[in-house]
Length: 242
Image (cartoon, rainbow, N blue to C red; front, side):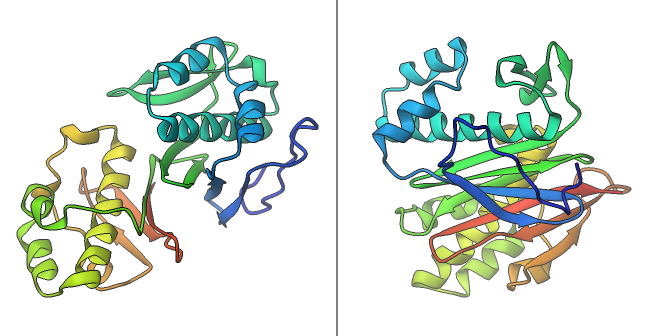
């Protein structure tokens, strides 16, 4: 199935899916997941999780983060099942490469890169058939300790750009830079072990470009950086290209 076609077949039991296509190109597909509170939807989603996933959900004491996990994982299972053409019960997840998750069908890796991110009320799933992939999302209206985090996570050049703006503009730029950095370190599998202050994203991305090219972990490897923002959230995608 080509990502360009963006033709997804929903399972018959999910006649009212809580996700929809957010972006679709030849190489990458991004799905938006509605994570607003809906107890009937959550109960239906829980049925698609396996025993270990249900146990993980139950161990989460926060109702909000539990809902985010259940709804995103059920949507992820449905999307991957469609892409691979397998039944939900044949799909399992494990972690490799610095704990980065991969999907298996009957014990064999499916060969599709994916990334998941969620925040209050909103989630994103990203898929690619080739190249490492990372996505990150942050709610625009959740309070952030911008000034307290600037020195910890941003390079000197990025700090200067942040100091040049104030108020809402600073928060917006903070989220813009942080989401693309987190998307990158999720794609490589480094996660929070990475020193995000040790590198700067391209100047054009800092200054508002929707898409940019970047060499991050290897000089010969090019990354495509994309803004996925809406009025409700700030989000970014990092995809390895060759």
